[in-house]
Length: 366
Image 1 (cartoon, helix red, strand yellow):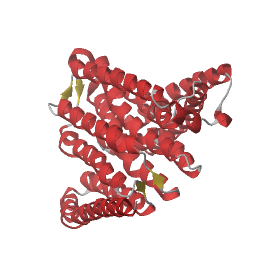
Image 2 (cartoon, one colour):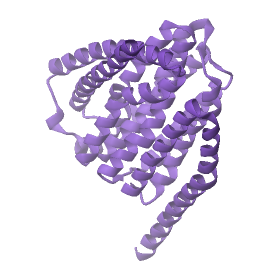
Image 3 (cartoon, helix red, strand yellow):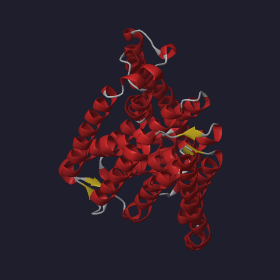
């Protein structure tokens, strides 16, 4: 028993490391190619970088879906939902702790509302307990429409592309292609090990595959997003840090769940009822919370970043209590609902009102 669990833990660790290395190479190759084309940094973050950093989630979820069965579906869906929650609360929060992030207006006006709409639509399509191939096709269609929109917006902002271009990140096309190929190989191998180890660990510990997917697998496959955004924040590339999170969350749902729904065929992709009633709403709520946070002065402050990370800690505690001490989990949810949630709503409202007041004062002075 102990030997079997140790082997599963080792497979998970090696899988995460391979995904991390593969994601790094994939992102480096993707960014190098995009720099040669002179794409704006915010668009790079929302498309190219987010595609690269979402590659681990893609391979893990697709492989799980192809394996079939309840366990495979549980890991595929929970990986996407858990990664989206992790990206907003931990990746965005930790990046703001490193350096306050200035938010561009297009994120508030276009990208976050789009992400919110997609999240609510995905929740609605999954609410029946199964994500069908028709729903998968609709999500893939949404991906194509969004990419066309992004390309058109890039062409409309040529000046920004020149300003954001980082020539130090440029590389010759053959080198970029080699990085993409090497990253792809590591991602395939890492995803196989991670799925195998996570499934075995869940069975050995008596924990559901959904919980493993929402926590260990989601955090593991989100490591590229975390590292990429932290480095971008440290270097003062706020557009890349924020765009990576928003773009990854969009692609996780549109591309990954879309492809998984198509691959599942006639049987459809099974969705755990607990996820429909608990984790999908949390994913939508974290996305919704981005709007007032982004509005508050146009900057994600260190305080707001710390609050986001703290909320993820509460989420993890709830997950642990639910599977170990269900009675205590109910009491914990009550405390969060009565004490934490009202304080959070007051903080968000105060930030939004303060920002509006500062805008009025600035207009009055001008």
